[in-house]
Image: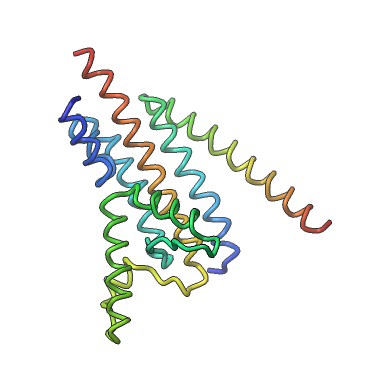
Length: 61
Length: 146
């Protein structure tokens, strides 16, 4: 597996782990845990993508 | 101070999900165990390891120390990896070759993936800290009420 794919997998997987654990900590019902996890995961990925774009732009200035 | 709760919290630090398992929340315990230990295991597969902190003026000191502390958030696995790392370094210093199992737990710092793999161990440890404190907070309140 190339290093690039591993980096992308790492971002997706580790942010999912964080989202799942926080979802488990906050809720008790499976449905609420799943919804909270998904919401957090998407927000986290979105934030990381924005940071990546900003860093990419700044590195070309 | 609730001694039983403290023991369960320490047990949860060593084995993720232990406290919840002892309190009857088996599914929650299993999910936490699989996620946290699975992440740690993936980090080991990618040749990561818990290495001794670099405590000098080179600039890596505080980050290295914090990384070490957080990686030990996954207690038993973290200590196993740290022990293997020390053992491996000791064996290499004596001109011996450590066994594949020791090398697996120790990681391989010269490899390019080592830093990224250690991030998996870091996330595993950090998430277990959150899980343990969450366990303690939940049952501290429940035990007080009962």
